[in-house]
Length: 277
Image 1 (cartoon, one colour):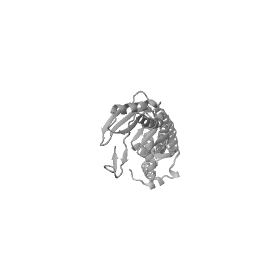
Image 2 (cartoon, helix red, strand yellow):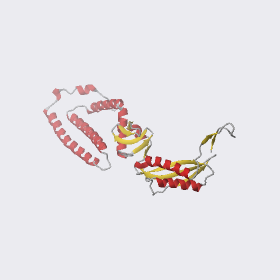
Image 3 (cartoon, rainbow, N blue to C red):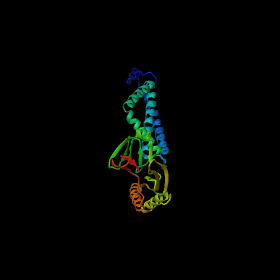
Image 4 (spheres, rainbow, N blue to C red):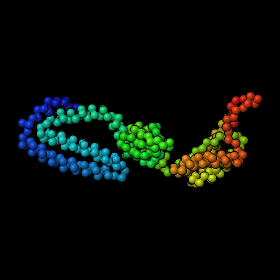
């Protein structure tokens, strides 16, 4: 950075101004304003692309305008024999002080620009991240607003959200339901599978393609683990999952298949204490 000498700026007195300097500065100002207008129009056209969010377009265009007009001011100042090095140093120091004062805000603005350009989610998407989860209600310059299931509006800083892991449950349109079942060793695997698939058929919003599957996934110490997997639309996920859980229990009970659970034996029973069936 060049050395800042404020005294050089003070040397410019009204007596040093001449008609020729003023005319030269006026001519440069007129030319620079025309060129600035052309550059701003060109930037606006380049930013008018479908993949650019409107908020990003407005922010980027405002940034271009500020930089262009700062350049115009420096050019005009040079035509008046104002020391440009000192002006640049003064602007740099002022910009550094301002950036240090609002560094958290600037980091959130930068995070917001990343979100608006990369588009990991859109308004209305349900997302899950390291700093919060919910339905995206708004994407502002500094915060992203999430509406949670329990009716709360959460403002998440864009800098933390853009740097975290984001899971978008809405983007693909469908979501898989996973239900873990721990069954005893006595029932046959085919009987458990048949009861679970019958329960899937009882729920109207479960998708037929891809079809539901029931896999035996593990042999536990006192129980066998099964995973029931099926698909539904994102909007139907929670209603379908709750309905399916209820229907699975009813179908297993109707088939006489018990679900393994912890039992507390009495003192007179062998192996008193908790035991997983």
